[in-house]
Amino acid sequence: MLTLNIKDLSPVQIQSYLNHAVAPRPICLASTIDKNGNVNLSPFSFFNVFSVNPPVCVFSPSRRVRDNTTKHTLGNIQQVPECVINIVSYDMVQQVSLSSVEYPLGVNEFIKSGLTELPSEMVKPPRVAEAPVQFECVVNDIISLGNTPGAGNLIIAEIKLIHIKEDILNAAGLIDQEKINLVARLGGDWYCRVTGDNLFKVAKPVSTIGIGVDAIPLSIRNSKVLTGNNLGQLGNVEVLPTDDAIETYAQTDEIKDLFDATIADSQTRELQLHLKAKQLLDAGLVNDAWKVLLM
Ligand SMILES: Cc1cc2nc3c(=O)[nH]c(=O)nc-3n(C[C@H](O)[C@H](O)[C@H](O)COP(=O)(O)O)c2cc1C
Image (cartoon, rainbow, N blue to C red; front, side):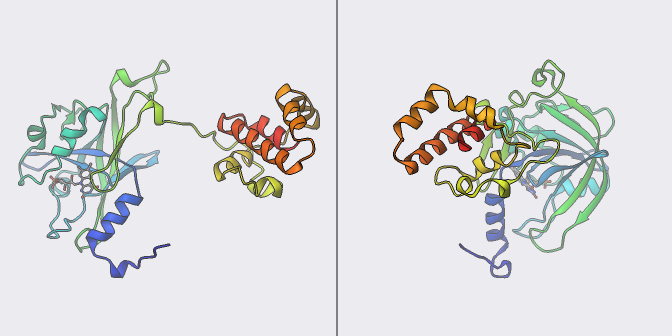
C-alpha cells in the first residue's frame, strides 16, 4: 500500500489524491451577487448537505492554488450573505463547466455559459432556470480553513426556499431518483451520471438490530465464494430461518438435485451451496440464502 505523508506533497498532488478518492461529489452551482448588484455563477463540488432541521448546505470556494487569491463567489457572499444553490443535471453539465472559467471580476457567468437567470423570491441572487432543484439560501457563517494556497472557505448556507421542477417528481410528489438525472464530479476531468441502470438499493439496517457479521458461523464467514457485501447482507437479518423453513426449502427440486449430485463429496456440496446462496443474495433473497447456508 502506498502511504503518503502530507508534508511531502505539493498542494496540486494533494488535490489530485483527494479529488480522485473522495468521489463522486455532488455539484453546487452557486449564484451570488455583490453589493452593486453584479451577479456571479460558479460550480463547487466541495459541497454537501449537513443538516436537515435547520436545513444547511456547505460548499467551499478555495483559495486558488495557482496564486493564493480568493474566488469571486466568496467575495460576493462577504458583501451580500445570500446565495442560490442550483443542483446540476446532466443536461446542463457542459454549460456548468463553462461557468467555472476564471472570468474577470464582475463578469456574469450566466451570460458566458448561456444559462438562464430566474428571479429568486427570498434572496437577491437569481436562480438557474435549467436546474432541476434550486435552494434559496441565507449564509449564516463563513469559516476560513487557512491562508495557504488551496485552503477552503466553508460557506454555511441555510436553505429558506426549495424549488423543484415538477417533471422530476413521482406520483407521491417526491423527487424521483431516476428522473433527476444528476451528475457528479470525480478527480481530474472525470464526471459521472446517475442513470437508472447504475442505481441500486441497499436495504436499510432493520429497525431493531441485525445479528452482525460476527454472529455468522465461521464456515460461512470464511467462504471462498461469499463476498464482504454478501456477509453484510447476511449480518443484517434479525433472526435466522426456523428449522421447518430450512427443511421446506431443502425439498425444492433444485436443492434436492444439488444434494444428489454431491452425495459423496462434502466439499463440493458446500461450494455448491455457497454458490447458490450467493446467487440468492445477489437477487436480494437474503432469507432464502440463509436457508441454503444452514442446510
Ligand atoms: C464541477 C466543478 C466543481 C468545482 N468545484 C470547486 C470547489 O469545490 N471549490 C473551488 O474552489 N473551485 C471549484 N471549481 C472551480 C471553480 O468553479 C472556479 O474556480 C470558478 O472560476 C470560481 O469562480 P469565481 O471566482 O467566480 O467564484 C469547480 C469547477 C467545476 C467545473
